Amino acid sequence: MTEHRRILLDGAATRVRREGELLLSPDGRTVAADQAVHLPPCEPTKIIAVHLNHRSRVREFKATLPPAPTYFHKPISSLNAHGGAVVRPERCRYLNYEGEVAIVIGRTARDITPDEAAGHIAGYTIANDFGLHDFRDTDAGSMLRVKGSDTLCPLGPGLVTGWDFRGKTIRTLVNGQVAQEGDTGEMAWDMHYLVADIARTITLRPGDVLLSGTPAGSRPVEPGDVVEVEVEGLGTLRNHVVAGPAPIRDGFGAQPTASAEVVSTALGGDWEHR
Image: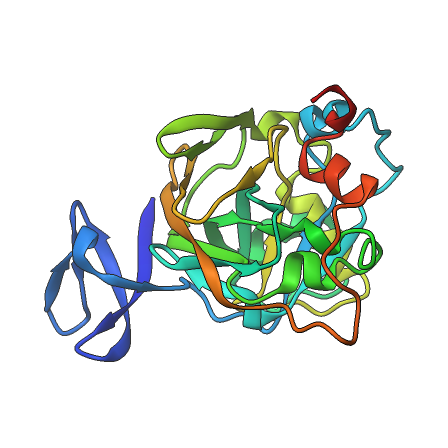
């Protein structure tokens, strides 16, 4: 396996290769991995995420898997990176983590089969598909503000090639305590299926990202919390939560709520028992 990252090196966005605990630039400069200022490891034109895919998550919500996957879109303005701050706006209470694997496209994909999908994948990285569930009851269909608000799509730390996605552990830790733990083997639809499914009607370009779903255990986090997503073979994506400097503007538009739908989703469907 090979891992490449994008970092700020002397103020310039630079693609580097990981060599142990060092990051090596094409011109020979090195920087310690834990000292680097990271950027998202790819530059997508779009970010597409699957709703339910992990069977533990389906059981948690007492839901039923649809006959085929359904998706939502996260705008590229939601991109964040390893080490970046995730902003919870003032007046919002239900910012949830969702650790998962991200698929990064390497070659244009359109009208391909699942068997052909591997040839169109550049590699894999880690994602934390944060959700601002305070808007869940108004954006439940599109998930636009829920999943697409600024800073809610950390990716990284690197793009790993030659990684086999089968049977890999996914864990999310909050302040060092395990909050989610699952396995790619519990996914109803694997990485190749997801790429081929989307590419039937949407052209996937190099750098585009598909988020493959999260296990059970997503819960709200607070400003000051440190959230880490560990994926076997891909490393650890680390972010911290901060309070937004200004509240969601009121006076127009849907406002943050704590409706039954919001609370139920944020607390994993078990809100009546808390």
